[in-house]
Image (tube, rainbow, N blue to C red; front, top):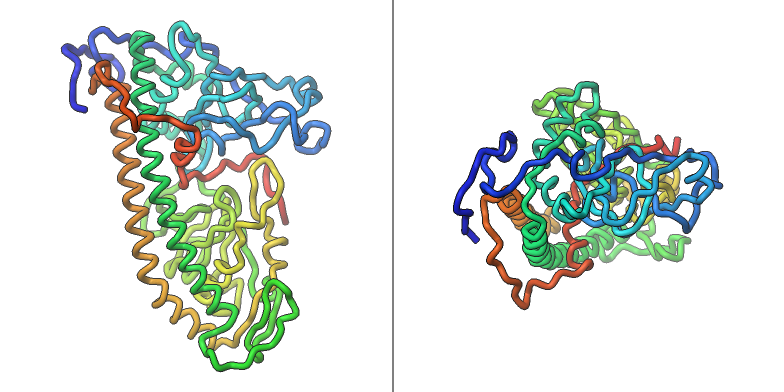
Length: 449
């Protein structure tokens, strides 16, 4: 759709200078009540339960509409800690967070309490809808990040004050509704595209895992005699192999805190739980190195031949922490399925004590190298196919970001758009838009020693 409005005027706003002549520009403080969330003490079991009022943290806002919570707070916590109840339909925005979390917005699907790392906007529905404001904040994402990066300190953060005084475009309420309907329909189409691509990636990963599983547990010589491992789920292993707990094979070292504002650029890749998240001029791990997701994408395994900086949402293993082949160990950790081991906390994560208790089959050093080299060859084509599909997802996300910006700032007029038979919006579809690159903010410290 390329239809423009008939006339424009200067908005006086840096991030969207020209807007339709009949649109207004308003500070968020004039559009609703803005406030901070709060987090109750984690030391009291009376404050947390399996039911009650949902407590939303910054790691859940990226999916657009929050309807579920990883934790619930009790009425005792609400009363004693004076937790604000934020009503359904309010917009929440992440004030802090690693990766892409900071500056992302969502609409609450139920009455909730929220973390201190979030602000809320209880909108005046006669002026603006929460759904429209969410799209407006998405369009302004880059500017919100710039504001937080310039706030000073070692960790970029937005503030409630910055949110209150931030200006957004304000079309008439009926036009807002049309914009929301249009963008939700496009989101549904894009979500179905991403969902299909993720299913393809899932099938490719399954194929890759079958290859890895066989090589890691049986080796490469089909004629070798096997013996019972003594572990029911593992079955038989080559007769000359050992079975050891992972803690006798390697150690998991904690990554270090490194906010985005502290990253100086350079040749060193910064790794988060989900992979590369930036660059820095100093390393804390020596290549070859394995990075294991600790928070967010916990249990995800990444590998680098080069020196890197592993941030505090990760563990890492380099030659300082194992005597075994790093490349072989990378495939063993994939086989371990560490993403199935979750610590029950506000932000699910990987407890290294649980992970290192995993039993693994152990060939000698020569076989480790042979297995790693064979798997590199056998999985290369699959890895390339996965990378191509991931690039398609990245490009469609870029298109979505540009479309939202153009529509919310009035560069494209959607007033004449009418939904078609494929413009059906479902929560299941929209869940596919959840960003895989989110790194959680560290709310509440470490779970293990």
